Length: 289
Ligand code: UTP
Image 1 (cartoon, rainbow, N blue to C red):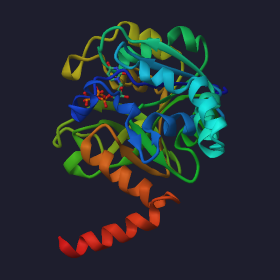
Image 2 (cartoon, rainbow, N blue to C red):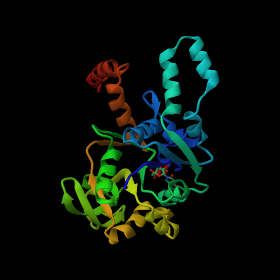
Image 3 (tube, rainbow, N blue to C red):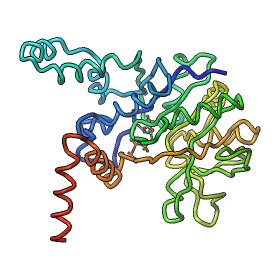
Image 4 (cartoon, rainbow, N blue to C red):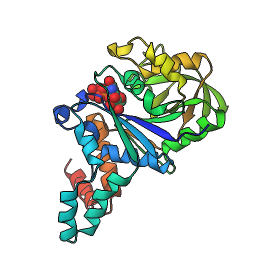
């Protein structure tokens, strides 16, 4: 099996980042000098994906505008000799073949993924959540794809998280197959500490085979009244059709304020234009705290 397509669900309401996200999609908030969504598209492209579907909604047209040309701006930059800026502006539009579909009602991640059925057809596909940025030596989605292709299976990206936060995630019941790769025996969405199968939480990256659509089509709403992808995957895991890959890399959830700030500081520290300045600023600041 070969994974050639990716889906980025980005149609959530972003209520944890209000009021900023009332009119600006959380995926378009700047992570230093690029919107969050660009990092996610770049991760997919680095892993060899060429066709990407973004699931969007009526309040998020800034996302499709961003990956388009902007001739008036480009001419202005060209005339002003601002070559670096021109290159950056055009780069976003040329990253990949990007397609869009709207989720007409915000009915959960599983419902958003179901909107990709026509785009995906009969192929396996990668899923990258629109607000989870990964930093890794090898693109995280590429690590999941490698295991999924090897075992010809759907797969989820996991990492161990501490007890204090495990109840915020989808959690797997793992059985070791090889280093960093597990067969998933069962799954649960946001378990209590007493009920959790393990501390392996699903963190924003998946490879799905198209049999997930038959399940999602009839999936009843679950936690929070939303159609949960984890519930659909649970049915597949009971049939022995899901792997978990304990991936290498750091994941930032930019969909909540603290995660967004952590990512901003780490990315700004590594950015050639801001790194040295921010390091000094933080050290000075630390003296006064
Ligand atoms: P989240 O729960 O992180 O996003 O969903 P949210 O619903 O926007 O966030 P809050 O809780 O209100 O702050 C995980 C992913 O699923 C997408 C989101 O855009 C995010 O990438 N999603 C969620 C959809 O595309 N559609 C939905 O109906 C729900």
